[in-house]
Image (cartoon, rainbow, N blue to C red; front, side, top):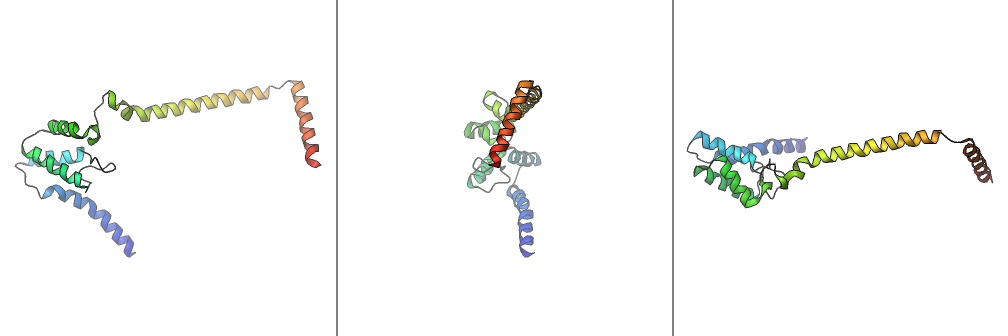
Length: 159
């Protein structure tokens, strides 16, 4: 029970720690603070596994938060900060990378896998259905030969 309470406390405290990351900073206006918070959610830590700058405690994430704060305080808008980060770290730094030829596989890859899986399933089902129909139509000679082979197999197993 004590371990469960500890785990629960750590899990619940983690978002609180993430929120306090930006709260100690002074902003010129509420708009800049809102922009800063939105940017921290838009940008991904490049060394962490799928964590935003809010969620990550990596040294690089701290540096990126500091850099984002500086850019916001200098008056940069969201698009220019995104462009700066992408130029420096590539499209991976954005949680929603832009749709361009270099990211097509990222955007449409899952759909292609679903379509390919559906096509394979359809082909297997058609093949199975055609195979079942073909096996149902056996000539009398083949049926006679099959019965003969099964009798021989049964006699061989008894020996």
